[in-house]
Amino acid sequence: MTMRDDLITALLSVVDPAIVLRRPEELMLYEYDGSALDQGMPEVVVVPRTTAEVAACVQVAAQLGVPIVARGAGTGLAGGSVPEQGGLVISLTRLNRILAIDPVARTARVQPGVVNTDLSLAAAPYGLHFAPDPSSQRASTIGGNIATNAGGPHCLKYGVTTNHVLAVALVLGDGRVIEVSRAALDAPGYDLLGVVVGSEGTLGIVTEAVVKLTPNPESIYTFLAIYDDLDAASETVSAIIAHGIIPAALEMLVGQGIAAVEAAVQAGYPSDARAVLLIELDGLREEVIAQAQAIEQICHHYGVRELRAAQDAHQREKLWAGRKGALAACARIAPHYHIQDGVVPRSRLPELLRLTEEVAARHQITIVNIFHAGDGNLHPLLLFDLRHAGALERAVAASEEILQACVAAGGTISGEHGIGIEKRNYLGWIFGPADLAAFADLRAIFDPNGVMNPCKLLPGGSSCADIRFARGALRALDRGAWI
Image (cartoon, rainbow, N blue to C red; front, side, top):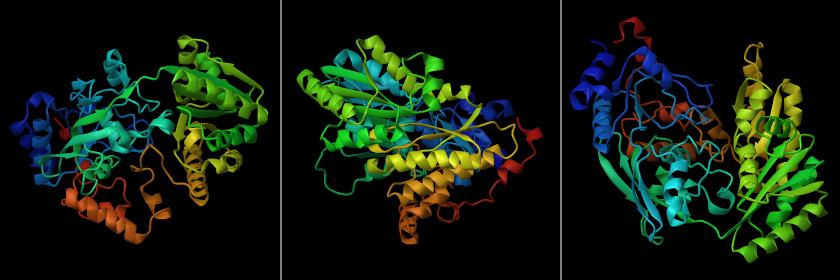
């Protein structure tokens, strides 16, 4: 019998055979994520319905030394849920229940497969919502948000996922289940929950979470600031924050991306603009009015062409539909994409935006900038056509150059997408050997056998050395023998 046969036999002995997927046509659905640049075929996929089933599957795989990859909705953009080493994928999509909402404590206990937006819809009757709002929130799940410490447009004011997680149930690499929490703001001891959030499944698998819910604001004011000059739009961003105003969201769209969004969504974006800022304020009515007046003055100081305010909820939804649908809209420009996720100080935005244009010209690709300007989280969208020779290679080289520039400007290589496969070898740009060794030591405390999402997040030498099988050995099996 092969290792794969042993794995299947062991899984069938501990869980319902109906949740064990092993036919090639089933497994193909789990070999990629939202980026589609990194791929890897799993040997087996299980779709458990309880924490106990997750733990049983982990224990079986760990005993065989098989790599274990947790997967949510598959909307990740860095290859974090791609089974690059083969092995077992544990899909958490059936763990999708909202277990409890406590409107007094303003918390919810949820399973990891709950879709981000669905949690806010369930909390709406209590005047509450879940604040993290990645652009994929209509599909992405809470477990995925926790894995990558996702943010979104409103993280400028409300913080990223780690600021909204109070506790998790975590299945460790040997199948044990522990609870990690920080329910008290002044709790003593190490912040282990802070370590787990953003660890991309390398420390364990989250099967439940207690998250904060945020009160809906009394008043919301959303408007579009339209510019003919890119530097002026960028400088407006820094000026708003320097004025002491923290908008709920402060987004920027540049050039071709604006035209593509408007063609796809008809959101009210001017197709001829050099740049637009989507600005949203929320809070007490009087506070919002005062902040809106101040921001309007700042925009005019920097030469805004026009300000367009949403007059009702429908217009606000249209403006946001444009921003949230930007990635799909750019398919009008080219059929394939590679999206990056660098961060820079707000004051360096103008030079980085100019640099992306220079990089695009040098590498002969199209780069569209649509990003979270308020916190300097750039999302250059590199567009190309795989049918053209060398297009992918040029896109990857261009994205690497942009990330290097972000680091040189005092920024970093990811704000919310995570590291995964795509950027693991870039960690050496921002961390030294001692730092990486400390990360690897911490990882080994949670997962001494190195089976939890191996070869992700940390450079290969730090995270792959202890895998107890040759890379790709399982994938080399004769696929014709699969059952």
